[in-house]
Image (cartoon, rainbow, N blue to C red):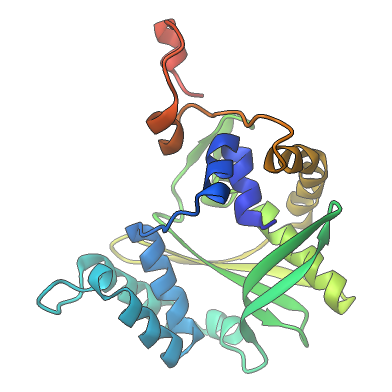
Length: 248
């Protein structure tokens, strides 16, 4: 299990199961650009390899950088000139793209951490987002939330934190460095509150038995009805009231 797939199950069980059974090659612009930025901070060789593997997505046929690639270069430049980012993320003691494994809720988990400083006891995750200050409506909280809450990064971070503590037997602080895609890229250094992360462990423990049952074919997955997979595959089963088209 991974945080990415667990969150997929939380969002739509039918889509998550289909992804596991029929792995999809995701080539969305947002993902490619996010990985382009990540590869830059891994080093010259990984970055050049990423460009070679994704040249058509990053460059036009005449060899010019696409608009999204140019925008990502500006995002990279914005991060690189920040002293706090460089102190934590570009520290000589830091390891990049660290693979971890361990057990949570009687299940084997794997994770890949963007930046890890074992000596100082912290890890960093690098996030890109449309706009740092964009609001998202949460139907669970019945309120507007930040992109951090909208994408449930607290769950992802507590998984990393638990796996690190299992391996190294010491506490780790969790930091997110975020950069947005606005005309003038904004950046933020975010320390994840433990009070936001800990409840997600209960979510994992409570929901994991159902995830396992679905993966083992013992339970039927539920469809969310609104994701791309459901829109492509869900048949009409009858007539609905117009009010049912509203999404909280």
